[in-house]
Image 1 (cartoon, rainbow, N blue to C red):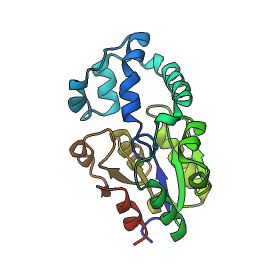
Image 2: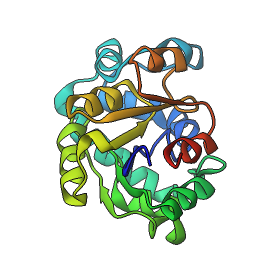
Image 3: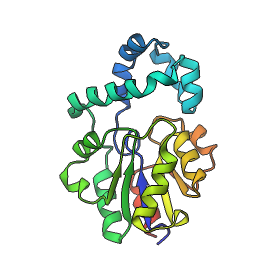
Length: 209
C-alpha cells in the first residue's frame, strides 16, 4: 500500500462548495471591506494562492478569523446546498476497506464537515481536525499523523489549493492534487504534487495499489 494515511481537505476536495461560496462572497466583501468578485474574475483568481488572492482583494488579515467564523455559521444554516462530489462516498469506503486510515484537516467547522459527509461516511474517519486558519494546516497535519502513529512520509494530503501543497510539503508529507476543485489544474500542477487526480475514483485506485 503506497500510503497508510490519507488526510483530506474538505471544501473543493470532498464537498462541492464553490457554487455556494461564489453566491455569497460579495455579501462578505461589502461587510468586511474587500474588493467584490465578479463572475468574469473567477478564471484569473483560480490561479492565485491564498496569500496572493487576499492581497489582490484587499482582505485584511486581522479580519479573517471573524469572517471565517461568519462564513462557517452561514454555511451551517444552508448546509443542504453543499453536496459531496459524485463518487466521494464510494471512494472513501474503498479506501477504508483496504485499510487506509482516513482523516480530515479543514478550515471549515467539524460540524459542517460531518453534516455534509453524513453518518456512514463520517464513521470511516479516524480524526477530524477542523477550524484551521488560512495558513495553519501544517501543524494540524503533523498532529494528525502523530496521533495516528503514521510517519508523514507514509501519509498524503489530498486537496485543491496551493496552500494545501505548501502545508503538506512543509511537514514532509506527499500532496495529492485534485483537478475538480477551486484552483486551476495547471496552477496546482505547478506545485509538483506527488499524485494528481483527474477524477474522484482515481484516488482509491492510486492509494490502494
